[in-house]
Image: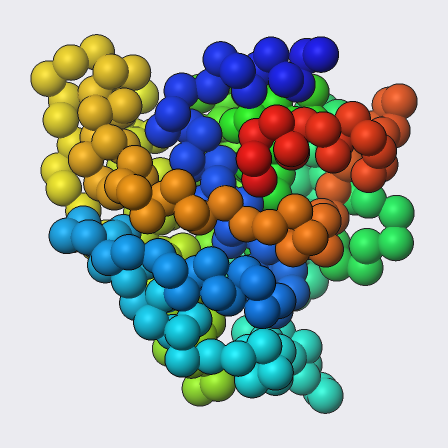
Length: 201
Length: 69
């Protein structure tokens, strides 16, 4: 099977990159269930900036419960009249939803053979969808693993230009408790990605 | 920018990148538990492949299972 063979050849660091993207996608798509909170609570801190951010996330997870994190997620991203943050690339880049950045993203996704799943309301430039896309492009889930140069181009065009600001905003959002720590992990991880991709030049 | 370690550009780009990623905590023991549950992952799934269209099919489930996501 093509997907399986692509994953078998995946370098360890790329496998772990994919896992981080998957984790961020999961946490930004919906509030974490109790089982995931428990696993996050077991993360160990280390001396690296990413390890320190994971330590903060672990502490936040241990202090949280599914109900309060669910309420926090709603306040941040949904809300009665909109959440505190709008986690869409088009919004961050133009101030409006469904603008040119989304059209460009849809062109690239079509070229890569990826489309929005039936019944999904969020547009493809939602942060969760973009991180899920990166996860799939790294692992070859959608077809086959994308070469690093093409991963870099997708990252630069659709993520790097706005997602670091989004995570920075998430860290500072008034309702953010658990999700403040998610923002820190996301910001540090994307900074690592940017530095690592820059080394390909 | 955060205070992540400066990249090591002494080797080829690919090897330098690999060394850099290994130095910044990606491969720390903590990262092995970053993988999320399949239940949570499937709730988060928003995308699928065009063409033959295996939306949430056994193929996708097996691929994620193989990757231990």
